[in-house]
Length: 225
Image (cartoon, rainbow, N blue to C red):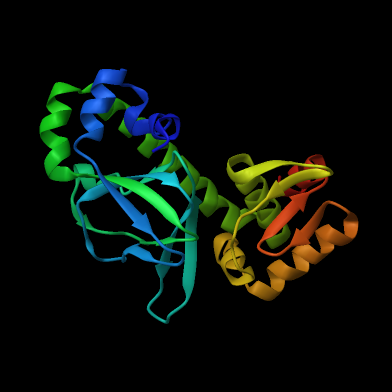
């Protein structure tokens, strides 16, 4: 398992190597195939997960069947941390985007361990605060930013976490369908496709299968404002 990726997770950031190794012994490894569900919205939650390899999408479904993607997470990122402090119904469904590996920490194992390492609680609270800040920004974008602006912002966000240099720009292999991209920005697939086609015509990006090459980062940043 890639220890550098695991140690980059907020759960381990405040720990020395000995403490981190001790915590790892309490965690279990989980392997998921493509499009496999880890847990469902409303299911009782009692574990936090750290992504070691692959991508996980978090989504919700409305009463009328519409779906919305809350986030796409990758290696080193964690989710389900609310269940460590307040076990209860999951607020989203977690599904693998591709083959993925994770490690999970249960509430029953975490509570006694936390008494010996209270510094971890501070790290997790900061991570929760960052998650809340991102949620507030997303809500503001839905109210004040048009769809092309939200598409540009989503692509830039994906590029910071999953992008890698290409000959003519930044390749972002997001592995999402067009429908999933639309769910991520809270718009219809047709509207998002129109925005992507416009960006491609302007030379700001190039579309590929479940990926995009960002060619003009500065113009996308200006459009995302």
